[in-house]
Image (tube, rainbow, N blue to C red):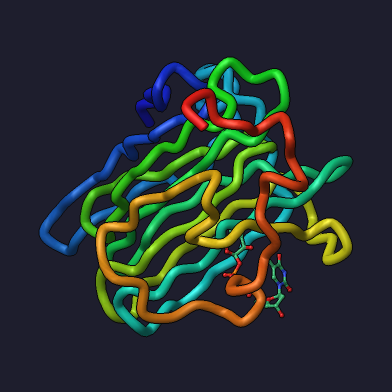
Length: 186
Ligand SMILES: Cc1cn([C@H]2C[C@H](O)[C@@H](COP(=O)(O)OP(=O)(O)O[C@H]3O[C@H](C)C(=O)[C@H](O)[C@H]3O)O2)c(=O)[nH]c1=O
């Protein structure tokens, strides 16, 4: 595995070591030692998978609030997605910064998302499958989010948004909930 920081943050783009042969390929998608050696503090305790059938659909932006803010590793095992993370951490030197990464079934890449980031993605193909390793259990009462078109974030999605959950459609504006997130150019 090769770990590369995203924009100088503790978020990491991870290139898998893919062993290809005539049958296809094999890759390790989790390894305590490799993460420890890379200085990435993460221990998965839950695995998730989602299927997004419609191209253009958006899941997110989601995050779990303290004291169970959730770090996660995500990868796209079928199809292709446009992944977006936002640093919501008060006091972070990259507070409010938004990072975009494309992940696809044939690239052998994963994204480590530290606790305190919001995460979402847009499906760029039909039947996009995203696999998650979660660093925290699911706490519905701490489950939070922001709209894909939150005015404070102004996330630029690559394609017209075709579908989202009812929950994702009605997240309240972040500005009122996270005053520390005021953008310098606001
Ligand atoms: C996250 C989660 C959800 N659920 C249940 C709750 C709902 O009944 C159902 C679907 O959940 P939701 O609509 O929140 O699924 P997504 O919109 O794909 O949420 C994910 O999308 C964004 C992109 C993420 O980064 C998060 O990991 C995760 O929030 O699964 C569980 O039972 N356990 C869980 O850990």
